[in-house]
Amino acid sequence: MTQINIRMEDDIKMQAEKLFAQLGISMSAAINMFVHQAVREGGIPFAVTTKEDPFYSRSNMKALLQSIDDAKRGKLTPHELID
Figure 1 (cartoon, helix red, strand yellow):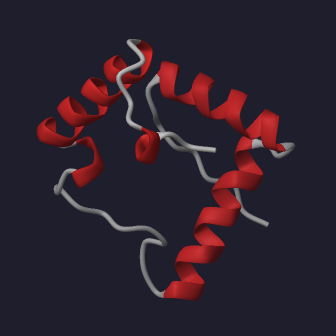
Figure 2 (cartoon, rainbow, N blue to C red):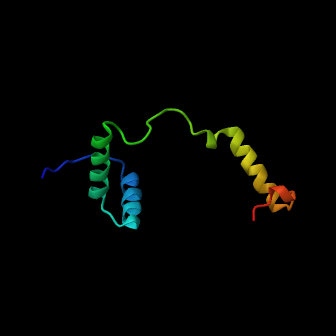
Figure 3 (cartoon, rainbow, N blue to C red):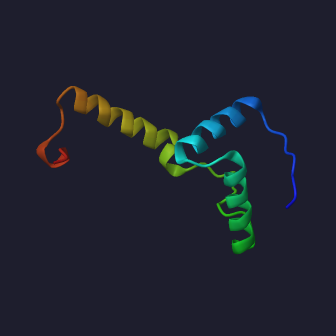
């Protein structure tokens, strides 16, 4: 078995440790999972892109916030209500 040292920002490390603890795994186990998956897939196991997720686009966020405001004000029509 080998040991690898990596550098990362303190706040990201703390957030990751908290997340992995909630998942019941260690930082080391999470990194090992990432590396194993990368080897299996022959690349990074998720999309690496500079493109913004369209869900978070300015126009969609504006529409979502308007919908939330409408819901709070009781302005939804029956077909917009979720059962």
